[in-house]
Amino acid sequence: MLTRTTLCLATLALASCAVGPNYKKPDTADITPAKWRWQTAAPRDHAPRGEWWKVFHDSELDRLEARALASSQTLRAAVARVEQARAQARVSAANFLPDIRLNGTAEREQTSGNLPTPVPVTIPAARINSFTTTLDLSYEIDFWGKVRRSFESARAEAAASAADYHNALLILTGDIAANYFLLRSFDAELAALRQTIELRDKALNLIKQRADAGAVSEIDAERARTELATARAELADVKRQRQEVADTLSLLCGEPATNFRIAERPLRQTPPNIPAGLPADLLERRPDIAKAERTVAARNADIGVATAAYFPSVRLTGSGGYLSKDVDSLFSPDSKVWSIGPSVSLPITGFAVIGANVRRTKAAREEAIANYRQAVLTAVKDVETSLAQIRYRREQGTAQSEALASSAKATELIRDRYERGTISFIDYLDAERTRLQLERQNAQISAQRFIATVRLIKALGGGW
Figure 1 (spheres, rainbow, N blue to C red):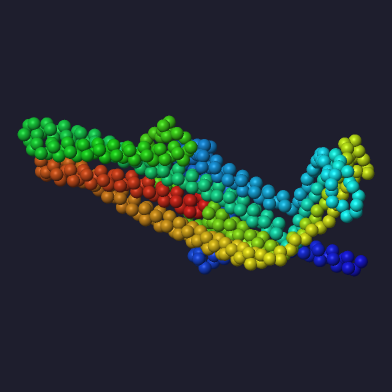
Figure 2 (tube, rainbow, N blue to C red):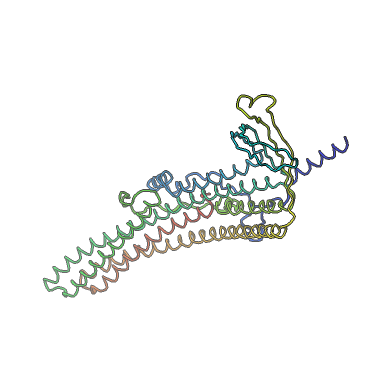
């Protein structure tokens, strides 16, 4: 009795162990700024982000994001990849259960009349029927945790695939917002160029009248024509760039570019303010960091799977059913057959291959850890870069607005003086060119401020 008890306890102890290292999340304290109040990695990419683009309060942007979520082929492909990974995890989970199969056979065979026998007895040839139905069972006892480690790896891979989906979602919505604000900057440039063309056309008519009257040189009229044609050429080029961005948006929204239209509307609002003192745990929502961390967990579990190959594989097999020479007596009590017993498989050779495989899995884990730490470094860099862009673009935009206001005022004063004949037409053209250039730059900087805010939201994993 004592021997049996000891054997049962030993079996339970073995069944509860799993070879290979238990997973421990990689440390990142040495690569993250203290001011960020960084915490040990605890991926929260599943945390709800909401519709982060609504912080811009732009109904057209909201509409585009909704269209993309409903029709994007990129998102549909990402969802399909997640389903594949989850299905693979379910395949690994099935190894916890015994493999049970119901088999049935019906055979008719011809035996030889010249079978070799150890005694001088002639066995005549015969034709024999054989009917069999059995229930076969095979179960590998997970002494060393191979099945458990395999399931850990598959489950972590499925989680990494889900993080890939969230990453695709964040990239898609961020790209739509960035391209939308870029398109709106072209709208502002188009408005400025159309206004400039209207003013230059009026100026050309006035100069032609004055040239016909001999008040100004014909050279001024030709210069005015040149400036008007140049503005029209720039208008066509900006239209081309806007159309290219609109086509990009149509692709992101999963719609044909032929039917995709967005009405012109220059940006009037300013980007939303960023709350001060953003905590570092926001980065834990970044899908790329979550994927990298879960890949480390998968590679760590792979070490246990590879190490289990050193130990014997124990399987319990059994079979039970009926065997008869005819169908009528197949399910009678005398036709019962069964067998049960364990099988043990222990590698005698091939330890060098197993050792190499263990070293390979350990190296793969080290690679995954390095990739995870690199993802954290990239996240910190992205946030710091985006914050710097927001700060300096704001300062640049303030200075640019002041320069534009001064240039517009100076242009008006120079126009008055030119019309009075106190300065040359070249001075007026220089002032007018400067005003147009500053107005277009102002539109571009305004868009870049919005885009910098979008990049910060993406760097933080989607909003704050």
